[in-house]
Image (cartoon, rainbow, N blue to C red; front, side, top):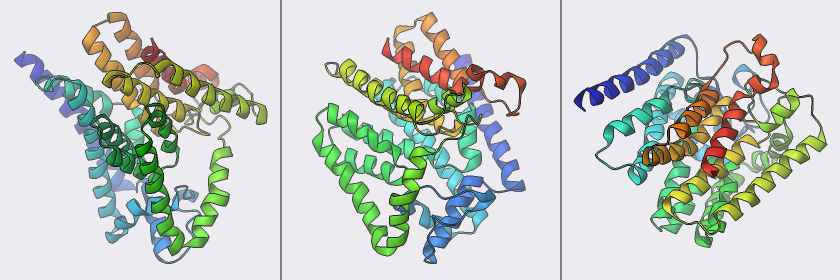
Length: 369
């Protein structure tokens, strides 16, 4: 057992060390692309400039709701390079934090080596590396979502709603998770979520009405209807359809139909099954469904599948089914895979180019069995 513990420690050290080495190289050569967009948009907002009009670093627009500035404005208190380092440290803490919450709920405390091994897997995949190297806010959103789920299990409704509301204030898509709480008849959480989200945005409506109107009237509808025409980094269902040459309103309607149908199926599947384990499956599957049926799902967005992967891992630890483990490993490989060359000849095959989506379907199937 001692040798096993040492081996796991070595695996974790190597997993973390490799990422830290890569991030150090990036920071010495350039900036974290998405983080710099956050930083420059926040500077403009403080100057009274509408952040939804300009294009920022590498001609990238700012696509987050006005309420996101609650989290982003403090970043401009520091020089860009210093702020990037702070953001990366916080991102690691949020990644470890969300995992720690789920480990505390589903893995016995004495199995620390198992927790460390699973954390190593969370580190060594492309969605994690892509999130970190871009300076994305995904791990902060994920931490807020899992914290909301934790307080739901602890029957602290107002706190659960507060954290879901904060997650939605930073990124709009988690608002769909109120479906989970409606299904569980947790109306206090739903109300608390909506109040938090509305209040967070009202703060910035009063400080910049033009920006708020521009976002909700123009930017948000654009995001809901924008696709990337099958670009490799996009692993959404719409991108897969685009790779098959299936584009246009009819296929968007199909995507919407699958989203609604998937939600209805999950509601029927879990309506009579209520336990801590079933709740995690339900919550994770909704998050998975929201991710892949979005207008676009960049590979860094696939970190939102991590709760589903951990839920499946907890089942494997308990049941010890070899075939389940092999299929789970395949799903992890497909989701964590990345071709450096978007023009690689293998990516001319729509199924291979959509490996993240295929892995998501396999993972979802495992949780539904």
